[in-house]
Length: 222
Image (cartoon, rainbow, N blue to C red):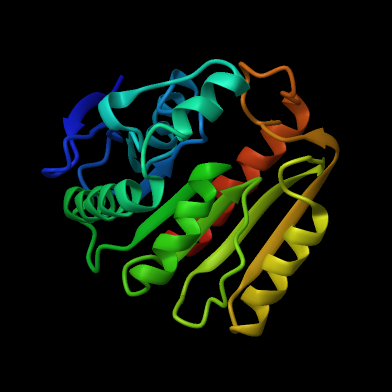
């Protein structure tokens, strides 16, 4: 079980899960538009069990969460995401770096859907500290010229929110900037396919994506 801490002076809270090792690589977990629900605190616990210090900040003010798509859309529209989220993500990443006690302070980042966008954004805003990014069904249209990270992506074959064209465009932009990129598309899956509380959940694809993620983190953060 983890603990709850403050994200700097942002007024936001975060869930922190610690591994048994006193010194371990740090991973920042950025949730989907549902908010910081047990799905994402569980990701932190699983990362800690795998040997990583994991921190998941709430990107929403007052830790708000949603259970339906309509609630999530309404929640997203209640605040200025572009103004609120970046300082929360940066402060949380700085806390991961300080808490991990690993020489050089590398920060791995895992983002889901909305959180994937902000994971990609952080890798470009703070390239010196972010050597590895894992994204689940989320893209952006940046050039990646400032980034230095290696990227792993997990995407659904049938996704009304992230088309395969958008996935390929993001991959091409990363490669054009000289980044190390590995993207997987999981046949027959839909958006949110790794989240066990969603009807789109695909256990086999979710487990394979998790195995690939842990292997990638071990390769990049060792």
